[in-house]
Each structure stands twice: as structure tokens, then as C-alpha cells.
Image (tube, rainbow, N blue to C red; front, side, top):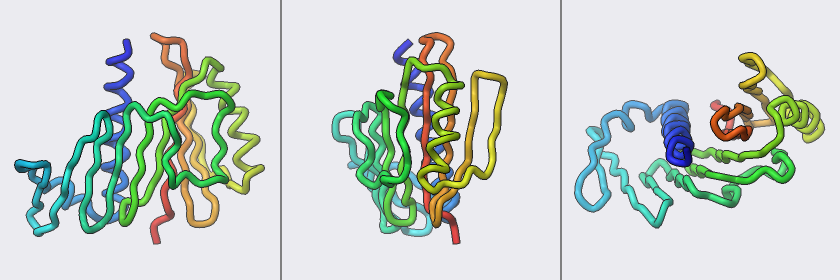
Length: 179
């Protein structure tokens, strides 16, 4: 069951990375990257991407910025905005930090509380911290995604029920608004 959850988190993180790169106009660069010895890659346009692994953490670096994926993360990324609320007593299970052209922050949490309680919390807390709720997608009571904005930041708060574990997963992605 843990490997299934980690696999789902890994897919989510890769999608987040892909979205970050796409949003920064570097989609073609990411698609053209080639892995070589020593963790350094070179893309068709000459941009080098260096990959390094430190325990569970994976770091991608280039001239455009860096992305650090921590699938076992227990702390918020250091670029987490103070005005983004986190669900009380939710356990951080992974995190992603991007800087430079791929500036973003992501954290995945788990709680025993139901999806409805988590959504109610964010419906109240986001506007209270100055966020505007711009959109919402709901699929019954098992998944709710809220898109919000504040100044030059955009956020997505996705809340899902993991039927296998009975836990609620909260995934929060925060990135600067594209100019």
C-alpha cells in the first residue's frame, strides 16, 4: 500500500514539474533532455540539466533554475509562502521546491479528517489570508480541487480520499502568476 501511495505521489510530482516547465516556456527543453553519465544531461538547444540524488531527494539544476523533489519530505519547502494555510495536524509526506524560471512550491499532506472537513477549512482560511477562490472542481465527495490567487501567486489545493488507507490527501501547489 505504501509503494502505491509513493508511486501516486511520484506521478503527481512529475506532472507538477512538467506543468512548471510548461508554464515557463521550457516544455520543449524538458522533452528534449537527454540523460548522460554523471547525472548531467544536455538538451538539443545546448542547455545543460544536472541531476543529483541525495538519499530520497532528487535535484534538477540548469541555468533556468532548479527543482528539488523530496518524496519523503517532512518539512515545508523553504519558499512556502507564510500566507498559505496548512491543515492543522496534517502530516507532510512529500514536498517539491522550484526556483528560478521554475519557481514553485508543493507539499503533500495526509490527515484522518474527511475531505469535507478539509475543504471547509480551506474555504474559510484562504479568503481569511487574502486569497481569492477562483474556481472549484468536485467529483462527488472523494475529490475537490480549489484554485486560488493572491497578488502574483496562484495556488491549487487538491483534496482526495484514499479509499485503501482511509486517509485524506491534500496536495497544495503554489506558483507565480505567468506574466
